[in-house]
Image (cartoon, rainbow, N blue to C red; front, side, top):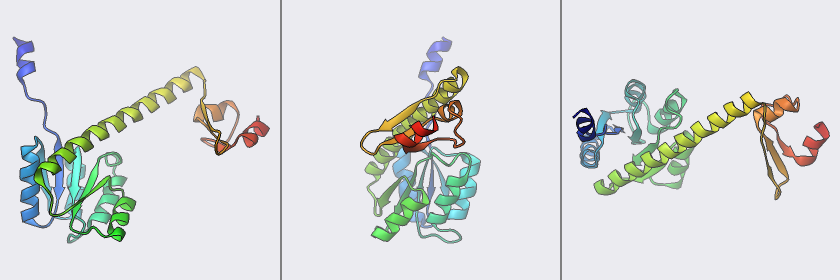
Length: 196
């Protein structure tokens, strides 16, 4: 009976932070995301977004660019500096789609860019895709951390060589084995061989 109850209990709904000072856009995004199976937390400006992000740790953020108190660029950069903000997908949801704004958005740390007015169904699909991509990236990061720990315990380093550019990249453990001061070595193969 306990197993049956567990199977019937719904999965937790992913949490999305929607940041926009326009209540119409806020409401439309919230309705679209609720229909797609998300729980939504609103914020009305960039400063509130940074504070709310730290408090609720959302799985995904949709954010406008032009807002009072703190614009989207500054808020995105501030979120990226938070301990839990480095890998969370942040999507700019804005009417500004000029090349300069798009470039500034990605420079601030944006994951994606959606132009207003948006299609609610597509917004839900995009949110699900971004969460799958984010989960895959987190798994890759965990695998890298496990590999680094295993290499450190076994005192085995790794290296990667790009023959097209003749660049050699050594892991931190490999640098330690060869007595290299750098935390990771990137350079021509000959430079590495001279040091060995």
